[in-house]
Image (cartoon, rainbow, N blue to C red; front, side, top):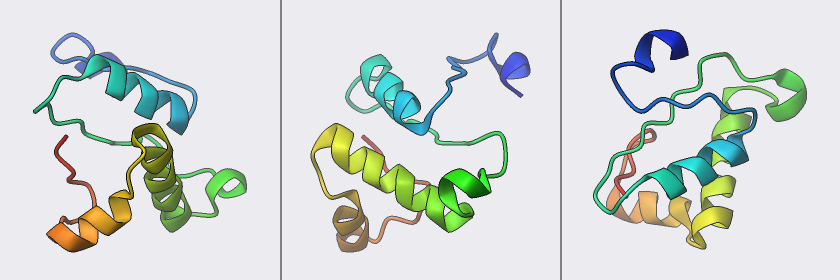
Length: 85
Protein backbone atom coordinates (compact mmCIF):
# COMPACT_ATOMS: atom_id res chain seq x y z
CA UNK A 1 0.00 0.00 0.00
CA UNK A 2 2.85 2.38 0.84
CA UNK A 3 4.12 2.33 -2.73
CA UNK A 4 0.68 3.19 -4.13
CA UNK A 5 0.03 6.11 -1.77
CA UNK A 6 3.47 7.69 -1.56
CA UNK A 7 2.96 9.74 -4.74
CA UNK A 8 -0.45 11.16 -3.77
CA UNK A 9 -0.06 11.87 -0.05
CA UNK A 10 2.58 12.15 2.63
CA UNK A 11 3.16 8.50 3.44
CA UNK A 12 5.97 7.11 5.57
CA UNK A 13 7.29 3.60 6.07
CA UNK A 14 8.70 3.09 9.57
CA UNK A 15 9.96 0.19 11.66
CA UNK A 16 8.23 0.81 15.01
CA UNK A 17 5.06 2.25 16.45
CA UNK A 18 7.11 4.73 18.48
CA UNK A 19 8.91 5.91 15.34
CA UNK A 20 5.56 6.39 13.56
CA UNK A 21 4.11 8.53 16.36
CA UNK A 22 7.29 10.60 16.67
CA UNK A 23 7.43 11.18 12.90
CA UNK A 24 3.75 12.12 12.79
CA UNK A 25 4.27 14.64 15.55
CA UNK A 26 7.26 16.20 13.80
CA UNK A 27 5.63 16.26 10.35
CA UNK A 28 2.26 17.65 11.41
CA UNK A 29 0.93 21.11 12.12
CA UNK A 30 -1.88 22.18 14.41
CA UNK A 31 -5.20 21.11 12.90
CA UNK A 32 -3.74 18.28 10.81
CA UNK A 33 -5.42 14.89 10.91
CA UNK A 34 -3.08 11.93 11.24
CA UNK A 35 -4.38 8.52 10.23
CA UNK A 36 -2.94 5.54 12.07
CA UNK A 37 -3.38 2.67 9.66
CA UNK A 38 -1.07 -0.30 10.16
CA UNK A 39 -0.55 -2.27 6.96
CA UNK A 40 -0.31 -5.65 8.61
CA UNK A 41 -1.88 -7.64 11.43
CA UNK A 42 -0.21 -7.11 14.81
CA UNK A 43 2.76 -9.28 15.63
CA UNK A 44 1.59 -11.70 18.36
CA UNK A 45 4.99 -11.71 20.07
CA UNK A 46 5.01 -7.87 20.25
CA UNK A 47 1.41 -6.98 21.09
CA UNK A 48 -0.62 -10.11 21.66
CA UNK A 49 -3.25 -9.10 19.10
CA UNK A 50 -5.27 -6.09 17.97
CA UNK A 51 -6.21 -4.93 21.48
CA UNK A 52 -2.61 -5.08 22.60
CA UNK A 53 -1.48 -3.02 19.62
CA UNK A 54 -4.21 -0.46 20.30
CA UNK A 55 -3.13 -0.22 23.93
CA UNK A 56 0.51 0.19 22.84
CA UNK A 57 -0.57 2.98 20.48
CA UNK A 58 -2.38 4.84 23.27
CA UNK A 59 0.59 4.40 25.62
CA UNK A 60 2.93 5.72 22.94
CA UNK A 61 0.67 8.78 22.46
CA UNK A 62 0.65 9.34 26.21
CA UNK A 63 4.47 9.25 26.29
CA UNK A 64 5.00 11.38 23.17
CA UNK A 65 2.49 14.11 24.01
CA UNK A 66 2.44 13.93 27.80
CA UNK A 67 -1.34 13.56 27.87
CA UNK A 68 -3.76 10.84 28.89
CA UNK A 69 -5.42 10.18 25.53
CA UNK A 70 -7.60 7.38 26.88
CA UNK A 71 -9.08 9.78 29.45
CA UNK A 72 -9.56 12.44 26.76
CA UNK A 73 -11.20 9.91 24.40
CA UNK A 74 -13.64 8.83 27.10
CA UNK A 75 -14.45 12.42 28.09
CA UNK A 76 -15.08 13.50 24.51
CA UNK A 77 -16.64 10.21 23.37
CA UNK A 78 -14.12 9.99 20.53
CA UNK A 79 -14.32 6.66 18.80
CA UNK A 80 -11.11 4.66 18.37
CA UNK A 81 -9.30 5.72 15.21
CA UNK A 82 -10.25 9.39 15.43
CA UNK A 83 -8.26 11.86 17.51
CA UNK A 84 -7.84 15.23 15.79
CA UNK A 85 -4.67 17.02 16.83
